[in-house]
Length: 268
Image 1 (cartoon, rainbow, N blue to C red):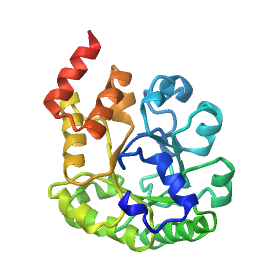
Image 2 (spheres, rainbow, N blue to C red; image 1 turned 30 degrees about the horizontal axis):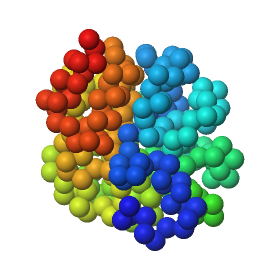
Image 3 (cartoon, rainbow, N blue to C red; image 1 turned 180 degrees about the vertical axis):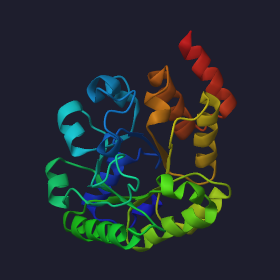
């Protein structure tokens, strides 16, 4: 993959666990509990994921759930949630710090650390500092860092090209190896401006399967290196079918129409 040309063997090997040979990834996000607790559909992570993880390239999750709920035989990428500190009991969830050190992530055989930062909030400086600290310390272990351009309820109106491009480029400028952000109108301008692989977040559950298929397809067509979906998979009535179809969109470029047909066929 072109974005790996200047990496050490160790870092490239870790990135290759996250991204498939085609340079794309289907990442399953199950880290919501770090601030939301037992979310509907993910009350029992081991049970909820056992039929999903055979179909994903990588997982984004917390250290505790990795230890308690994921088989050690899982050979895909492990992206560990490494920031936190606030919960949904607070009106402002942007007050985050680093919660996991790089050396602890390495002990868990992580492929990357995931750190959120909150541009445009009173905790902007603090969360950028946490991101840069993670990047700097992770470099000692050739460990990639995924930067999450988080928005939260306070920034819901910021899911636009100007804001997301700003946040994504800043993450790349500080040395993040992967940038996770939201899809928006003009998304191809964002991916063109960010010289790192961009992974698209799913966000809250969408109203229909078609909406999910269109999100994934449009993201990939406009330069994304993959998607990191959670609630739009495991809150679905047919989560295993959903992840199979998403994998086909990401890796084989099937269209939303073809995705709907595949979903119907798999339900028969």
